[in-house]
Length: 117
Image (cartoon, rainbow, N blue to C red; front, top):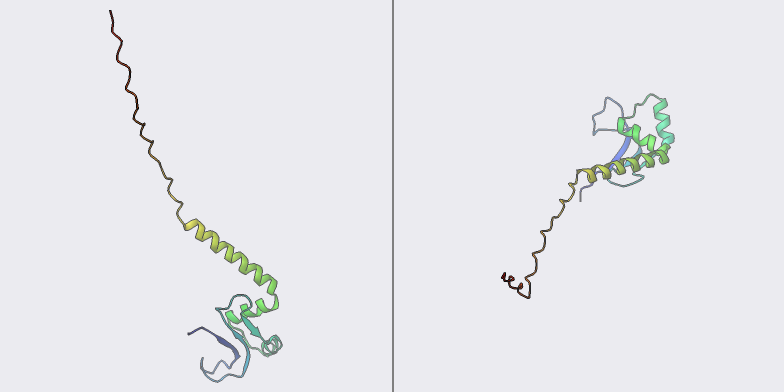
């Protein structure tokens, strides 16, 4: 089974994308629910102080790791919004109309008309 799984690394900007890197500072599993990354925040802070620039995704992972309560609240709000959108896009069931029941046939015949004299 091919699942995406990434290493968060420190690399020189002159190195190719899949080339040599300086240090592995964490991992990221985007398919995992909840806490989906492990980061060495002390090493990340060290490299940022030396001038390293995190990518947008890594910046987001750092923010989630530093403040997991806010990230959980944001994820819950997004899930609720997605559920509401799914419920709104689902068409409402059409009302079912029932035809009036046919009058039952009378068991006794109607009385004969009265004779006039």
